[in-house]
Length: 148
Image 1 (cartoon, helix red, strand yellow):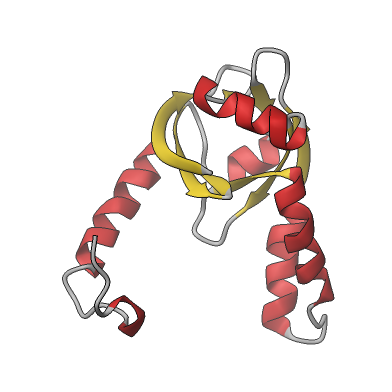
Image 2 (spheres, rainbow, N blue to C red):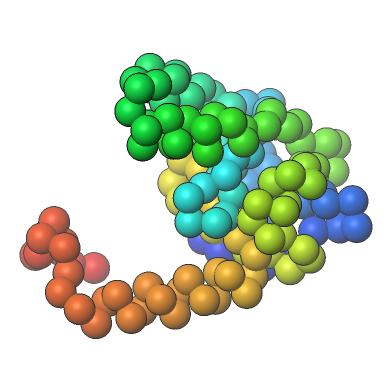
């Protein structure tokens, strides 16, 4: 559904203008109702609300007695915020989420199929360099025989 990378800027109020190529899809899929949450890699995740709800429900069914499950619930569900695209296709990113992902002005919106990742541009560039270094080592077994 969502793919590609877009270099964007947050405005002075912390609003992100969703690129026009995604707006119609989001309006059709969820009437512009989105969920933003924190990701363990230091970026934000942006879901159409119908995509998020089953994920939230699965997370909430995890055992609260398992420390790793509880930490994941706190991160993903605890940071989740419902937002609505305005008539200009913008969403307001709260100060809490902007701080978590170190978002200032220049950001990267990365399509990941059923969701987007929103990165601080400098953190995105560093993450990309680290990913290239990982490719120099042995690939995971599930990638054996994979071809592009």
